[in-house]
Image (tube, rainbow, N blue to C red; front, side):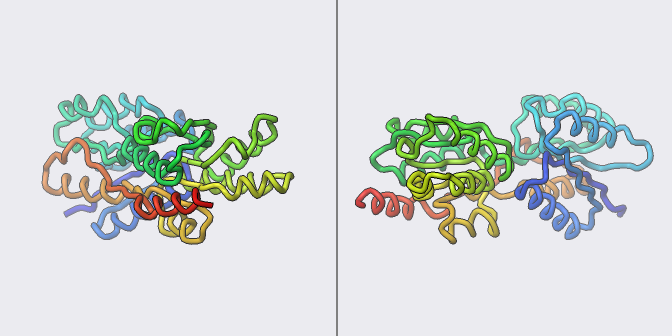
Amino acid sequence: MKKLKLVVSLPNENSYQQEQARTAKEKASQLGADISVIFAENDAVTQSQQVLEIVQSRTERLDAILFEPLTATALARVGEAAVDAGIGWIVLNCDVEYLETLRQRAKAAPAFAVTRDHTEIGRVQGKQFAALLPRGGTTSLAAVQRSVGMESAKPSSIKIKSLRSPWTEQGAYEVVSAWLRLSTSRANTIDLIGCQYDGIAMGARKAFAEHLDQAERERWLSLPFTGIDGLPLEGQAWVDQGLLTATVISGTTTAQGIEMVVHALSGGTQPPARTLIELKSYPTLERLQVVGALKHKV
């Protein structure tokens, strides 16, 4: 049996995406498949061009493309070209509207999604907020993209102040540093720093640690910092070290996607349209309730 040839397209090279690449290569090696990983440098046009060029290539026969889209349209036309050419189309970390239509269009090519439930991730983070702020709070600083779930789970007494940040530690550092220069940024109006990526939380923490006013700096750094992804050597380790208060463990999607597409291509089957990756709070919500109760006794 010939070796399957797979391409994985990822949006950027932050720590989570590097882990996506690592686990993809590891799983492909275990299953005897050839794999190439490319990064789009956070540029949707670059991603579209990269993937379309691969689909249209006549030099080498490709079996499947796994990609995490940078836009809501998620390369729908490129996906059609891929399945028309008999190339599998696997969407990572995103729910796309065109998938059912694409599955009907595909003949031998598998087409499906492997994603994290971003609404549920937001709900878990909202529950973390509730556990850490049992009496509610004035506001919280969040780079919120999973806000629907978070808003549904947090108490109404917790108000949200949002800052938009790139999905990198450096980007978050720059955004928070700029915000801190505003006269309206005061630590006594904030009760918790909630971020949608552990690296963003650490970038924000770095910015607060450089605040020139000692009293403000100490107040900022005394607040709970929470993130999402929970990689063992990052989010979980930062919680264990006391740098973050909590994270949401929501693993990579590439390994699951590769395993499913290899089995589908080998057996001529079409996997389920949508597969969700498990997630959980770290530490547990029960433990965070204890932390929140102790904090509010002080």
